[in-house]
Image (cartoon, rainbow, N blue to C red):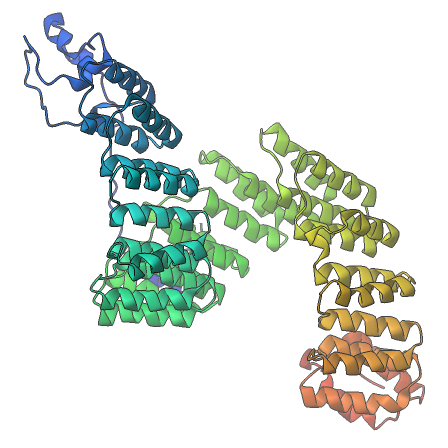
Length: 630
């Protein structure tokens, strides 16, 4: 345990937060029959012969205790079997029970999240000729939308129109929410505009909030903010949940300053008090940008407003600190969590384990793993992936393979990320065959490689001088969308060029335009390097001009490639011009370029006077290097 006195300033702020009282709840609930020794009284709790007798009876003779008749079926039904049995018994009654009884039952089944059963019961009601009302229609539409079958929800809406049951704002809100759940935000927008244009209903706060959620989900923050203002103008006052939706979306898109401005508007202009969700979104956004001073201020605000941190917010802080390599500070947060009666969960420990793995401290990562188990927490696939990544980065492949096999023994299934980590580690350890076998095992297990896996395999093959195998895989994938990625082409062009397959590299580069792909700075740099490697200095310079004409500016790496290329090809007259261009653009020369320049100065191929210019382009840390002497 770390001494609290050593905690950083922002941790001290958190220490001032009010402690959450400990609640003690008894988990022992006795069966009603256990309360009575007198069996005559106990019979009052015995079940009737039929379900319908229990749930539909409105009068009872010889009842020894008063009954609350106001309780609905939904409050009495506790499981699906009872609900289905009750429905069967209701359908056999002559006359049939009132429509509201069927609707109550439908609502009870829906509350159990048995959406498909609710829809099926609705179909049986229709077959029996049971009349339905607007509430029944709304329930069924909600079920369809929750099952991601919104089109069927619209069909039910049509059924309602056919039976003169007009939808209300709740019905349309449910359909809009269904479209948002299915990521059909454009269609949701069209429906929303149609509702307003044709005055089919007056949107309420819930409907506006659903549309704002959809717009944020699709990354359309500007329209969401515009709709928020319209909502306010129309007299539908947004609440903290509506603001939280937009603030969270802005933070996820790294528009944290915009989120903070909206936060100020919410608090100071609208008088809406933020909650822990608001602060969590803002702090998460600031954590991603390492803006710890502002995080401290927000934590202080939470303290002043007596808003306690929840597990999610603690986890946000723990994860951010671990990613910055401040694992001990993250451990302080965990100690603080426990002091405040918030206990770390699997997500918390996954962050700590990942933090240690990123630092290469595998023994501490394993200690955290063991501690996690001792506290009754079951590791998930993310836990194992973090450990695997740590072992592979340290090239401890045997330990990684042992852990990989342990995953299946624990009853878990490796996912695409698991395989990607292992394949990358094996290629880095030069164990290409095992990596290749694992890639085929992955596909055999019906796990399709994603963009990351595919590029890992191609890069691994190229780096291990197996360019032919990489090209075979590339051609095998054919018109797969993974082959429509400039990053894939860059790997193959670079690999082919370095393996002496210049013609293949050039053909792949020329193929980009036919594929509709725009070469980026890496594409051009790799190809320029390839031309220099072949001694084609003119073509290299020509491609540089073409690069700039296309609007793609050369970067620091490009200029280092140019310098090394002209030196290797004895184009000494060009060196000074390139160095001056680098100075003008604010670029620097890397270690290998410095070494080459000094070598050519020593051998009198370059003028000694260039040292002053070279000194301006050497990074500060490079000036202390003993090799920077002639």
